Amino acid sequence: MSLDSGRFTKSFVIYIFVIISISLLTIPESITNNIKVTIASPLAPVQNIISQTSNFFKNGLRKLAAIAKEADEKEEMEKEIFLLKNKIIKQQDVINVFKRKLEVVTEYNRNIDSNEKPIIADIIGYDVSNFRKSIIIDVGKKQGASVNDVVVFGNTLVGRISATGNSSCRVMLVTDPASNVPSRFLKSRTQGIVQGTSNGVCIMKYVSRQTKVDESDKVISSGIGGVFPKSLYIGNVVEVKQKSANLFKDIKIMPGIDISKIEHVLVIKQKREEDISE
Amino acid sequence: MPWIIIISVILCISLIQTTLLHHISILGIQPDLFIIFLVFHSLNSNMERSFHANWATGLAKDIFTEGFFGLNTVLFVIVGYLISLIKDTLFGKHLMTQISVTFTISIIYNLLYLFMLSISLTSADLLPMAWKCPLITIYNSIIVPPVFWLLNRFYSSFGFPSLKRK
Image 1 (spheres, rainbow over the protein chains, first blue to last red):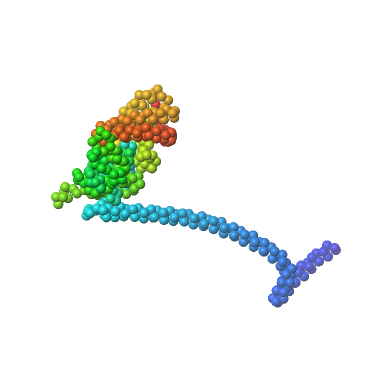
Image 2: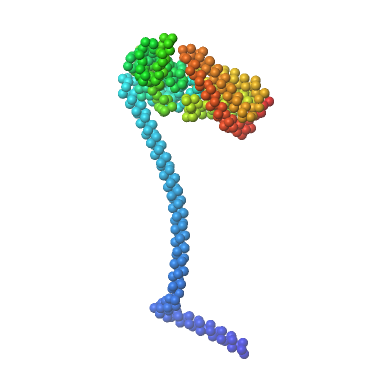
C-alpha cells in the first residue's frame, strides 16, 4: 500500500513540474525577464568580483604576451637598426674611399701639367721581406700599366712598377734599397740620387761636401734619366752629416708618404716609344 | 694529399704575410712566417720531405717579394739542411728548442740574405740594415709558440704523416 502511495507521489510531482514548465512557456516575456533579473541580481556582486579578477588576469596575460611580442619585435628592430647602421658605415666608408680617390686625382691634376690620365689603383699587398720595400696594386696590363710606370700619391712619388701581371703589379717603393731616383733640392736646385734603405728613410747620395743643405729642405725628382717625371715631391731632409774624409754629405730624407697609411695610389703611364713615334 | 695540404698552408702563410702582418709591424719590422714554417717542417719531418717543403716555401717567399727570384729558395734549402743536420741531437717537440732553433736560424738566414743582397746591390749601403736582423729574430721567436701550436693542431687534424719522423 505504502509502495503504491510512494509511486503516486513521485509521479504527481513529475506531472506538476511538467505542468509548471509548460505554463512557464506561456508566461509573457516581460514577466519572465523580470523574474530572471530578480533572481540574478543577488549574484551580481559576486559575478562582478569574479569577472573583474578574471579580466585582471586575462589582461595581465595579454600584457605579458604583448610585452613578449614587443620584446621580440624590439629585438628584430634592434637587429634591423644594427644592420642599417652597418650599411651606413659601409656606405660612409665607400664615400670616404671615393673622396680620397678624388682628392688623389685632383691633387695630381693640380700639380702636373699632363694630358695623360693616371690610373687609380688600390694597394692589395705588401712585401714579405723585411729588407725589401714593395707593394702590390690591383692594376695590371689589362688596365694599361707596364714596367717602369711611375706610381704617385697626389704629387708625391711612391715608386715605380717593377713587374706587371694581367690584373696586378708590383711597385718598387722609393724606400727599397734597389731604388735610385735622380732628384734635386727644391731651394738650392742641387742634384743627387735618392736611394732607399728599407728603414723607412732614404738617403741622398752624391751631394758634394761644399753644398749648403738646410734641414727640412724639400727634395723633388729632377726628371733626369727619363724614368721619373720632374718636380714630383719625394720627401724632406731630416738629417745632414759631414764626415771629415768623405767627398759627399750624408743626407737622410724622410719620404713624403708613409705607405702604411694610404690605400690608393696613382699610376702614371710613361710615354712609350711607339706613342712618341705616332 | 700531404702535398696539397703543405701547398695550402704555404698559400695561407703567403696571404697572411702580404696582407695582414704589416698591421703588427714594429719599426717597420714584421714577423717572418716563412722562416717559422721552415723551422717547423725541418724539425718535424724527415729530411727529404722537409727539403721539398722548404724549397716550396722559399719559392713562395720569392714570388711575394721584390728582387732576385730564387734567392730565398736557395737560402731556405740551405738553412733547412742545417736544421736537418742537427735535429737528431735536439728534442724538437720542446718549446724552448723550437724558440732557440728559430732564433738561431732567423739570424743565420737574415745575415745570409743581407750578404747576398749586398752582392747583388753593389750601389746600396746595406750595413745600416744590419740592425734589423736581431729585431726580426726576436720578433720571430716571440710568435713561435702560437704559430707552432696552430700548425701542430692543423696538421694533427689531418693526421698528417710528415710529423712522424722516419
